[in-house]
Amino acid sequence: MHQVIVTIIPIFMLIFLGTGARRLGFMEPQFTAPANRLVFHLAIPALVFRALTRASLKEQFDLRLVLMTMAAVLIIVLLTWMFNCRREAVSGPVKGTFAQAAIHGNLGYIGLAVAFYYLSEADFSVASMLVGFLMLLQNCLAVLLLHFYGSSEKKNKGWGMFSRVVFNPVILAATGGMIFNLGGVHLPVIIDRFLQILSGLALPMGLLLIGASLSPGLLRRWFSLAALSAFLKLMALPGLGLLLYYLAGLQTRAMVPGLILLGAPTATLTFVMAQEMGGEVDLAVAAVSFSTIMSAFTYALWLGLLT
View 1 (cartoon, one colour):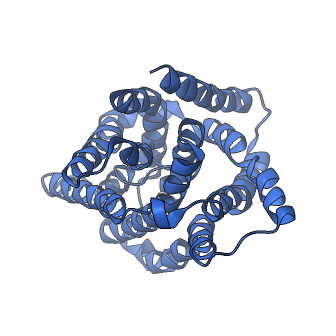
View 2: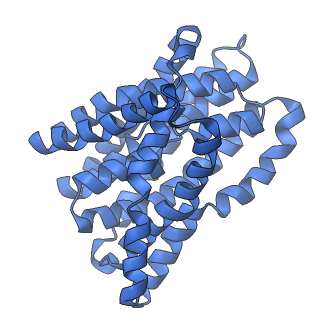
């Protein structure tokens, strides 16, 4: 439990430092937008790619972990669909945003940060591999959900989002890292050191940016739906994943990378997708803020159970 505490508390201290920095004017929109692009397009892909090129994937890759993780996400999508079917009076944009908030996790910033500081180098490589599969699935599902439920005038943007999913830099980095690894290609020392320095920017800056994006002010209006989506994202999804891991016969150590990624709070990308595809933007912001705050406690719970 001591390892859980010393991992989780510093991470969320950095997130809340980002919130304070925004309020004090140190992280204004004209800084956070380009900084976010820098971290997402360069630093995090460098972190994922380097981890995978240094791993022993032939020994570490477990198809059961990938399949059970993806199955858990699909089951939660089914549950949100059943819930939305019972709420005929609720608008489509609200339904779509609620559904994607329940399955679209912040893998790049918070999920990988917890994995990096909690896991060994070998297990972090497993998490980096799993990120590619899970990010592709959840982004495709988010596009489909918003296309299905979203406002008609913006539905035509949905298919254009798929190209952004396929060419997501983190997915490309994970794919490239696995190809290099399985092909037996070793990076030159200079390139490896360059990627190590660049990837050092990823997690601290990413956590500060997450903190700067939090907006608790919308929670009062959207509290019930934000709380329900957070319950599905932070409790039901990792709990279901844990059950499926046990049923698949995975060892406890093999479960932890998947559990960390499934337990990540709602991604800030849900706000962008809601804005682009006719979802409910305010609900997306509320869901991101509430789930991010609550994930400090749920991460401690889940990791504590497996300690």
